[in-house]
Length: 155
Image (tube, rainbow, N blue to C red):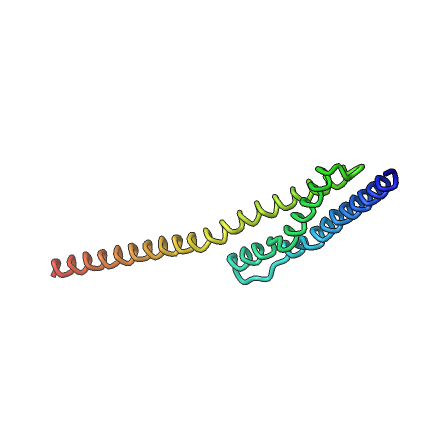
C-alpha cells in the first residue's frame, strides 16, 4: 500500500509540474502573439479612414487570446486540484495579460466606432457645405434677378 501511495504522489507531482509548464507555455505563446507596439504606432495610409482601419486590424489579438484562455484553463484546473505549491506568479501573469487584453479590446471598440463615424461625419459635412453653396448660389441668382427686374423697371 505504501508503494502505491508513493507512486500516486510521484504521478501527481509529475502531473502538477506538467500542468504548470502548460500554463507557462500558454502564457508565453499569448505574449508572443500579442500585436507589436509598432504595429499600432506606425501606419501607412492615405487618409483618416485608412489609418483607423489599419489600427483596427493591428489591434486584433488573434491567437493570443486563445493562448491566454488555454493558460487560464490549465491554471484553474491546477488550482482546484491544489496541484501548485506556489502559483502566485502565474496568477499575476494571467492578471497582467487580462489587463492588456482589456485595453486592446477597449481601443479596438473605440477605433471601430471612429471608423464608422468618420465617413458619416464626412458625408454630413459635405452635405452641409453643398447646401451652403446651393443657398449662396440661390441667393446670388435671386439678387441677380432682383437687379435685372430693377433695371427693367428703371427703363
